[in-house]
Amino acid sequence: MYDFPPYRPPSESESILIRVVRGCHWNRCTFCGMYKTTKFEPRPLEDIKKDILKARIIFEDRDTAFLGDSDSLIHPDLGEIIRFLYNAFPSLKRVTSYARASTIHRMDEDRLVQLRDSGLTRLHIGLESGDELTLKSIRKGASIDEMIAGGVKARKLGFEVSEYVLSGIGGMERWQEHAIATADALNIIKPDFIRVRTITIIPGTPLHIKMKKGEYKPPDPVTRLKETHLLLSRLKINTIFLSDHVSNYLWDNTTPVYLGIYGHLPDEKSRMLEKLEETISIAEQLSREGRLRDSNDLMKEGVIVL
Ligand code: SF4
Image (cartoon, rainbow, N blue to C red):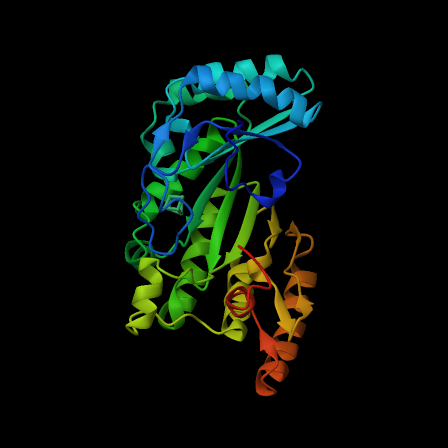
């Protein structure tokens, strides 16, 4: 048996996958259904080493690796695991992990430097929103100050930082505050990558229950595009902006009409804003005609899986 991490960023689709911890030790974010049925545990070092040796057969000579599940930084033997991984895969160039900003914020700098020196190169951090009220309402477990401090610290210590933004999470009430505060936070963190995900309501999650009670109203697709436009227009940093997830896509019935925006900032910002403006016009038209569909619609019909 090889214990695969059940989730990884799309950018790690070619990576060697090593499960360092199972589940999420926080596991309280209202929108997240990823690890609800998984009991959290750091995996025993010897089991992880056995998986790494098996991974040599499965993945052969890949040069990137991803460590799962959520927040593997808290594994006490992570440095040894990463060194073992590099020994097993001599061609390895990149090792990445999900990380909570609050964990980075709390962690001793010397320990983070040791992990970096062991070869941990990139951290995928879920900012979700820069809006304090939104962070509280989704029970993210970190204040915006902690979010910023965690991201800034990771950058300062030499990690590549990929920050995830959750489009629509502010709801219809706070989409503008969410966009503006998120841009403000990203302008301070200066991540290497900004990755947008669009809120898809997972049945059974606390957010789904709030929505059913009318306590959360997700923005419609056109409003979400306006939110992304507002966010992007306020970014002042050098970074790579990506929408590399199916949750961002829009469809005319089942034909894709929007696959997200991608580009380097600031050089490609004007082109990306224009693309969003064009898409807003198309989406408004399709919406009037009742043909516009998003990931929530297609997930309910089983056309896509998230
Ligand atoms: S979003 Fe991340 S931190 Fe929050 S519960 Fe899910 S895995 Fe844990």
